[in-house]
Image (cartoon, one colour):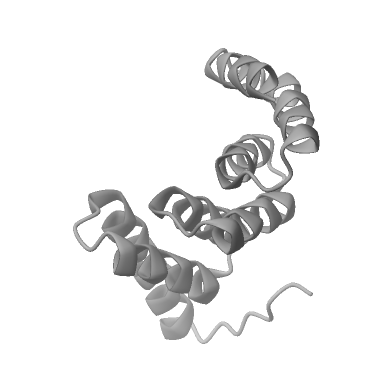
Length: 129
């Protein structure tokens, strides 16, 4: 449903993330195999702090059509969950697709810094179930 998708994008730009999320969901109800819709809804989830849902949507987007944006969305949500190893993996997979992506390289470096800091402090982090 293209109208719901465009409405969702407009709401997102206006910072109305809850409403955008509802419209992305409506668009997905009409086109459940649209990878772009899942990637966009993942961003809305991230803006709302729904990181687990963002990871799920980004993962679905990747399964349908692996893109830089989908890996970026997944990696960022994992980073926010402090799952730095998994986030690093997502960013690396994105770089396999687009090796010169500056944004992915920046996020990858952030992960590496957090992993190094955690390691130097002797912190062991169990991943979320």
